[in-house]
Image 1 (cartoon, one colour):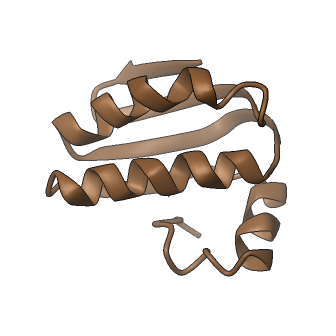
Image 2 (cartoon, rainbow, N blue to C red; image 1 turned 90 degrees about the vertical axis):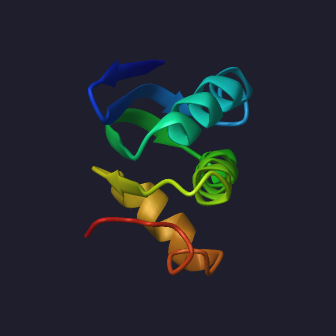
Length: 94
């Protein structure tokens, strides 16, 4: 689920292959309309589909000339990002 709070997109629940498709379009719409901070502190379990989702949002934001940062990423997501060597591509706050 995505909840918009000003410039903050709070994402909650699992970010897995079973759930990310439902978040894709709404997230792209939100990150292209204004600069955003994606807050993943409420995210549950994650898999590589979460990386694909965040890469898509990052690409969309850049294409629209918007700034995007990702905060509160769970440790599992940070590990996956490093494993797949996309941690330098994603705007992850550390």
